[in-house]
Amino acid sequence: MTHPSSFVPISARIRGLTAQLEHGPSGTKITTVPPKDNGGTGESFSPTDLVGAALLSCALSTMALGAGREGLGWGDASGTVEKHMSPPPRQIAQLVLVLQMPKEVKPEHRPRLEELARNCPVARSLHPDVRLPIEFRY
Image (cartoon, rainbow, N blue to C red; front, top):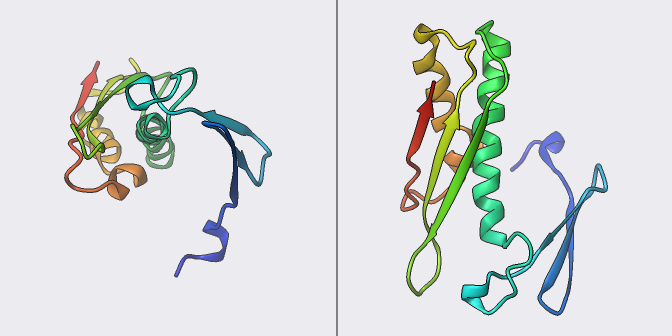
């Protein structure tokens, strides 16, 4: 059973192939469309694109939160994610992250921050068959 404070309502409505998602607490909206290689237009994020985006965002924000809690040097970071789908039946086979780390990160703190990224909540939530290589660039 989930903790009551961890419940976040998200709603969706689909018209044609375009789904509009709404984050209950903030009202923020995201649109998804199936990718071209699966019969969609590819004019927005696909649902599986959002999984990759969630992993990238989670890895970066988990490191930033951990650095703050543990008093480690941190600054601005960025990254990319490359999603690879399997042949039918379609599923995410691999999400390749490349993270440009802040210059403020001291060499002795790198292993701890990398551990936080590799074990962020999204990474821990994905099926173990999904490969998750991460390159950290300092």
